[in-house]
Length: 199
Ligand SMILES: [Zn+2]
Image (cartoon, rainbow, N blue to C red; front, side, top):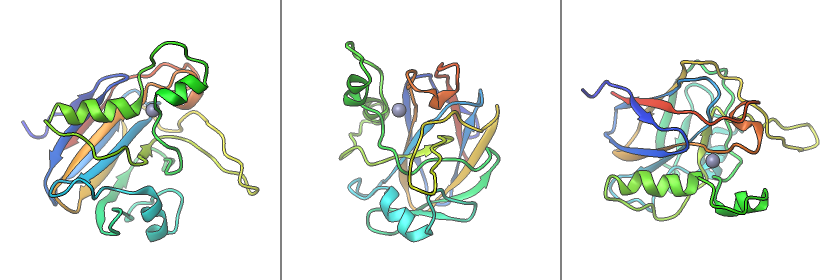
């Protein structure tokens, strides 16, 4: 059943193999969930989708429909084909990690996207070579003319999605961000599941 939606459980990660030419539809099932997204070249995972290389290629802070995200070898890896979410995503923020939550005052372990990447890849028998900066789908980080950034709730709605095309055989990894101290997953600060479909 290649067309069935695969769950990204709340606060967890999921990874999948995707062949060149296939599409990945990332669905914001409940509407306000940020999904950290990584893509690694299946043939050599030290080549991966890179936000800094992509921004140089597309000359935008947020990819628009038709834009191809690039690898750290400056080759297209994912093209944005459709976006019903309102078009607000983030390419600036690092994945959350234990240090981020320590800095926000967490004394105990907090779920985080960096560990979710490793967990999702581990289920495929893989390990990421590092934690690249992710494409933070649905994450709303507006900027001001003087360069100030802020963490805001998503503008996406339930069931909205982005459709991406794989430009090489790759491993996709997605994390339903467990951030519940800032409002990036909605003012209710309740991380939820999301879904994706590889077709
Ligand atoms: Zn996160």
